[in-house]
Length: 244
Length: 247
Image 1: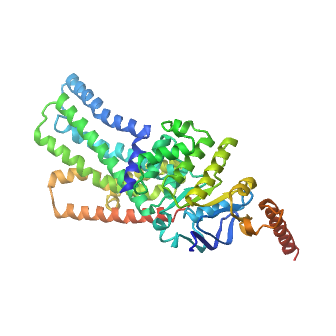
Image 2: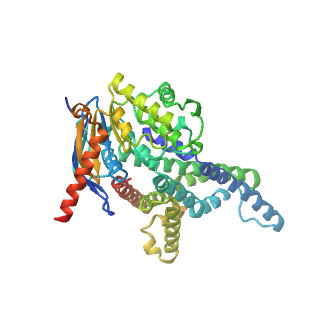
Image 3: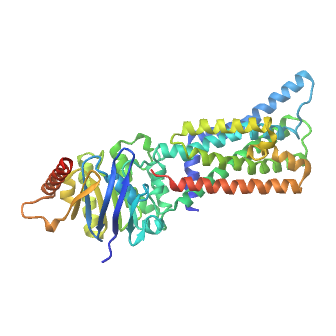
């Protein structure tokens, strides 16, 4: 897709995107030695080299990455509308479907890269600073990070649909954060209702690691896929109807 | 010969009452067509409808025989656009912004980007970010973006906004050259009468969203200019409106 290169270039040329990537890399590198120092001081072992990447992933999937996703998406849709730069592309011979798809694809690639950055630095931290780092642990951690992309992308598509109702990136970001917090609250307070929401799958990788492929997980994967397809379509509908 | 642009009975109204009403006109190949009107007449709305940034409630628009509303890519294939209020990306350089545009057309080489930068006098600023650009410099860059794909038809909405005297003269020279030497067709919306006098072969007068007059340069009476035609049309329109109000 021709416009994917453009969307990617726009995304990574932003100073904020680079800073957030660096912070993502630093997060495990700072937390790892800190935990090691605490464990040595108080003579306890909360995390070892094997479990450390999964602890970081749990934090990243629940809080950090959805926030980064909301930031990127708000900027890519509402921000560009606010700055009137979206129309700079829309007045060229490219369909709105292609523009929209390339934005979604760029979001997916950005998310994958963030996951891989956090994965690499948490594995390095686990291997260097913490004890009991195994090859099996390494494979599980990589699989867990890659599996997490799927439910996070479903959340991303939900945010993409909603941010298009806002003409300002800050309002879109605030709404996205509130939406995610509400979904998290529903997950804890009303688990039966939460099953319908993608935030319910924040521990998706854990379920795969614990049980492997099962009919329940396959059904859930199908549900997430349908949810993503539906939100992609709704998001495109909104995008295609907009006037600038 | 088939018209390059056909606007048929287009109506687009906004909540504040502004917009365009039942606008129809066509642009022939090789023409420089001027759309003249005061601020708020609906020129930008019409231009936005032509490039599908706004959707008309009624009417149809065709570019090169392709309906814009459902054959957008085909319609815009050989069209360059500069729409008032549309901004390039300010954290990127002039060259990068043109590269983004170049990727949306087939076979645009780096040399072409350099060439259009030179045409608009921006070659020295190619590696500067847009953040530091004045309105005039931005306008020059937008013109470069419009001409990048070697278009056969160029849509220019208030193209000299923010340009200084030299910039305006350079722009008028460039449009004249492209029109005469390369046969490029232009539609130019403006509120500057001298621009229309100098560049346009045919003019439509837009007032309060309605086309109140249209004339070819060759159809002008002796001693008549586009300026006097504009005054005549707007006066007539005011009288018609006054009578309508009284009735």
